[in-house]
Length: 179
Image (cartoon, rainbow, N blue to C red; front, top):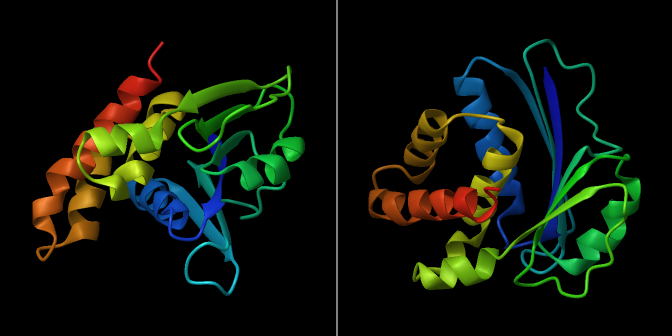
C-alpha cells in the first residue's frame, strides 16, 4: 500500500501542517512516511505546498510529481497542480475560496467548504483541520485514534483547550465528504 498526496495553498493556510499531521499519524500506525515541504520566502501569502507519501514498505522517493490525491486550498494552486494529476486522480478543493472551477472530466473532484465550516465552529483557523478530516475520509490514510493522538501531541499542554475545536473540525470535514 502506498498513498501519495500533494497539499497546496497560500502560506498561512496551514497546508504544511496538514501534511505533517498526516505523516505523524501514519507513523503512529507503523507506516513509512515522507513529508517534503516547499514554500516561498514570504511568511504568509506566498505559495506553500508539501508532498506526503505513506507506505507500508520502504519509500523509494519523496517526490510526488503526478499526485493521485491533490488537495488545494486556493485557486492558484488548483491552476498550477491540477494539470499534473493522473487520470482517475482525486481532487479535494476548498470550495469556500475556489469558485468557478473547471475540473477535468477524468478526475474525481470533491468540494470541501473549509472556511464556511470553520466559521460555523467559531474559529477560522481550523479550516485546515476541516480539510484534514476530508482527506482522512476520502483516502483512509489513517484512523481516528492516530489523528487524535497527533492533534493532542501537536497542541501540547499550552494549547490543550484547542483540542476540542480541532477535533470537531476534523469530524466536520469527514462528514462534509461522506457519500
